[in-house]
Image (cartoon, rainbow, N blue to C red; front, side):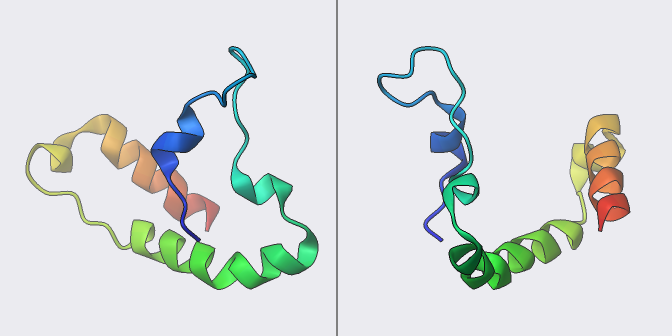
Amino acid sequence: MKYDIEAERLPKQGQGTEKAHSQTRELDSQALLEQMPALQQLLYRLIGCQPEGAANTNYLVQYALALVRFIV
């Protein structure tokens, strides 16, 4: 998908302080269905994450992973 999460966080030139939307918002139904396997793979990789070290006891990390697992 050539998706850059950091680029999505930055406002696009000429938009001032408005937030840029994810590139998936601009896709039509057919294009979105074509990207679905890649999006699902990313989600499955996120769900499979096992935090290590300090992240293992970090409340925010544990909460975020719990939310992702709850949504799926």
